[in-house]
Length: 181
Length: 427
Image (cartoon, rainbow over all chains, first blue to last red; front, side, top):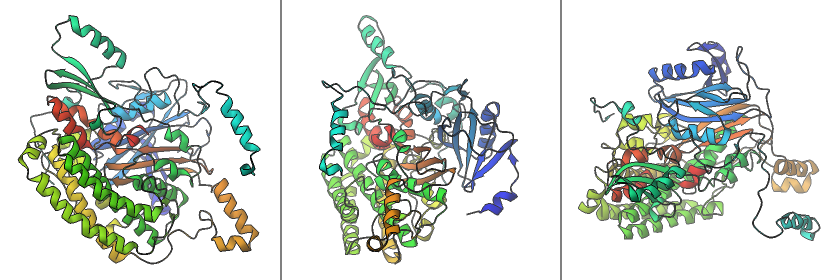
């Protein structure tokens, strides 16, 4: 395992985009325009498989360390690539603004992202340009909202029993129960 | 490395041509079904699942059939979705394993392991050597139990119903050992950040040795019952074929990728725990069909038994969890003597411990492929974002490409050979 010294000796950019390190793991920070071209260049360079695509909503924690020149936005699309030849992983993080939550799809390069990008669309509401089937995958087709967004309250759903508030009442009763101390 | 090559076929273009893949919403499918009677369509839509016994829980398939032949298909998932990634944002790192262990319920140790390794990487701690080897022991035994489960359900799906009983029998013996160690047959919450929950119980070595003596003859039985049987071979050989290029493009990992002849196993190629200190072979196939995937899992049980024997020889003595007061509560005896120890104990279990800011992705080789865990920490005691890359979820995308132009009877064999666990698909 490499340590901080190795990381410091590395250049600050690769493939023409800024890089950073988190716990010895390399991260590339392309803009939305550079994203597809970067992953294509990586694919030519041996990163033949895209193992994972996910996203993070930084609404509740906008402060985070990013390399110079990268402007923090609300959403980040995170793709994990692997090179079997070099036995190496690389992570690509793309900033996606809240007022225009779109990003290019990796589907032309890696067909396996189809389900993963549908999951991101389903749970974060980020759409991917060039994706063949941008529909919900885990939630029902008529679901409203995107649950993994930080402003999507956990909340409660109405229960189909008479006097559904009874649950809250029973919680309060538990407060006075001897076993609740 | 032998790679299946068909140079005249452009795999990338074929995967994206829409051949075999049905992209249709349920509303459109319902309309299509109503229209069907009065039009002379050559194809019809057939719904399979989610309660079909061969769909391994709640997988649902929309099949477009021409007679007995599958033209296009679409796996529909989400019936078990309970928002576990959202739940994880509300649990401390100590509580995290209780949540993730419920994802892949056939191999729960692996999700616990991926979560714990990711948390430890964020914390920058190294667990004691004994904990590493205990984790390896439990992982490999879990791989055995998971692959035995596959043998059972695969046999049942194809029609060899007695195999189901044999597979469940041996799996149950392994689970009985898990119960002795962790207190539970499944959903163990045993591997935790900082080590494991408890040391191995007295007599564990004899129990494991007993398992290792008992399982191999039963695998020979499976060979006799299945591997050489003409009916078994006819049902599986040449069915659900996928090439290396397609598997790589689709992100398929584990036995599916290896069945195409691609020699890749994270345990050997990007070692974690102490896999670089044990000797084992990576089992690969040749044809990328259902039979290869069956044979790979059968032989991976044998390789895991080899690994477990080496673990028994090399199991070091020492602590089973890290003696770092930050993540490990003080020993019980200290709580009686010291007020500070009591407060410390209380704090760890209520507030949890703070994890420094950062983000990591850690992957392990689960019985189904690459199981990854991506955690973003904002410096608090709960993950800001926790994502699990489930191998079954990604592998399911191979289904339409494996089933295209096949018979409807073969869809059952194909689903079974992918070995999806829906809890981890839907999370």
